[in-house]
Length: 277
Image (cartoon, rainbow, N blue to C red):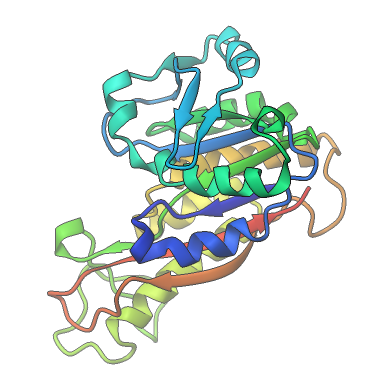
């Protein structure tokens, strides 16, 4: 099973995360993979942690050293710099949700599935396919759960993204008109996000990449999303996913922290999606 959800502050997006986590089935889980983007440092591939556990306000979550060792053995993963790991919030903001879900499902922390955190950098489409190939066998394992961390559109001058999608066009322009009412800016942002979500729901890795290229949508977890979409494509090609809807993300919740009405405003969008193999 897979979920995709946000990593912003709880007061802004905690309810969005709740939509994803209430749908998460951990009954068969032995391994929890958590993929998040880098906001702190740059890397072109993926990195793994050197820590043995992550702390939360509720308790510690152990890291799965066996699987981390297997991934290192591919020689395709770098080592995550400890300083940037401490500063990175894209994985951290998920940890309390993961712990609480585990505590509800299992009687003792000794039984808790272990965590495999993966730090995803600015991967190319070829790199996403490579990591998708590596992770596909783990994704196919019914005892594995995957969580992908991403916010959606970061809109406003402070984010250097002010694209506007007129009602009469499918092509965004760089700036909204002075009096943008057709549609209002916040509805344009919603439409831009919906195009990205449609591309993710298509299950086609290249379609998602093309959407990001065309719209420039500032989906900060686009690379972890791309890795997982590539992994899903591998499983479909190998016949390990059957059924029209299996292995397809389905978005179940979407919101913005504010409805922008003029060029001086800003907002961040949040979404939750679920996929079942």
